[in-house]
Image 1 (cartoon, helix red, strand yellow):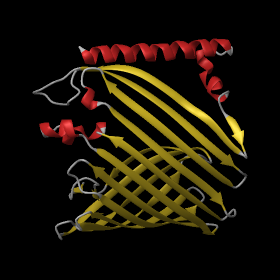
Image 2: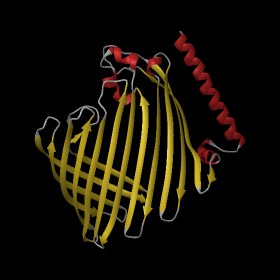
Image 3: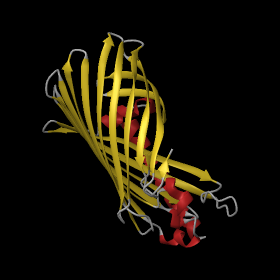
Length: 314
C-alpha cells in the first residue's frame, strides 16, 4: 500500500507539472504544434554560446514483466522524466557543442528498480583549411541498475537488492586530409572505458586506431581501403587484439546519396591466446542531409570484443 501511495503522490506531482506547463504555453500564445518555439524562449546567449533547454519528457507506461522473467513475472507502472540542456558556439570554420541530459524511471510497486541516468557530451569540429579538418567528441554517462543489462541483473536473486552503477566514457578523434584532388586520408582514434561499481564485472578499456583512404577512380566511384587495430584490456590483465584490413568501393547515386561496399579479414589474438581469422562484410546507404548531419542504413558482419565479459562477438 505504501508503494501505491507513493505512486499516486508522484502521479499527482507529474500532473501538476503538466498543468503548469499547459498554462505557461497558453499564456505565451503557443500551440502544442509549436512547442519548440516555447523551448526557444527559455534559451539565451552568453559570450557567443547559445544556451537552451533542449527538451522535457514526461511519460507513463505499464509493463507486465519488468523482471524479464517468464517464471516470476512482476507487473508495474513506470513513470519516466527527462530533461536536456545544450550550449553551442559556432564560427565559420568551427563548432563547439556541449549537451547534458538527466533521466529518471520510478517504479510504482517495485521501488528497488528505480533508476536514474546522466550523460554529458562535448562535440568539436574544426576546418583548418579547405583540405583538412578535425572532429573530436567525448561522452560520459552514468546509470544505476542499467535497464539494458537486466538479463544479467536478474540472474541471481540477491543482486536485485544490491544494485550497481555503470560508468561509460567514449572518446573519439578523427583527422582527414585531401592529399590531392582524387584522394582523402582519414586517421581515427577511439578510447572506451567501461567501469562498474557494486557488481561483479571487470572494468575494461578499449583502444582503437584506424587509417582509411578514399581514392576517386571516376567522379562517381571511389576505391576504399582501411586498416584497423583494436585492443581491449580487462582489469585483471587479460586482453584481446584485432587487426582488420578491408577494401571496397563507394558509388555515388546522387549528389547527396551514396553506397559503400567493403569486404576484408580480421586477424584476432583472442583472450585465451588463440589466433583466429574471421571475415568482414559491410554495406551501407548514406544520405548527407547537411554539413553536420548524416543518415545511414547499414549492414555489418564483424568479429569484435565486448566490454562486459572476455568473449568475442561475431
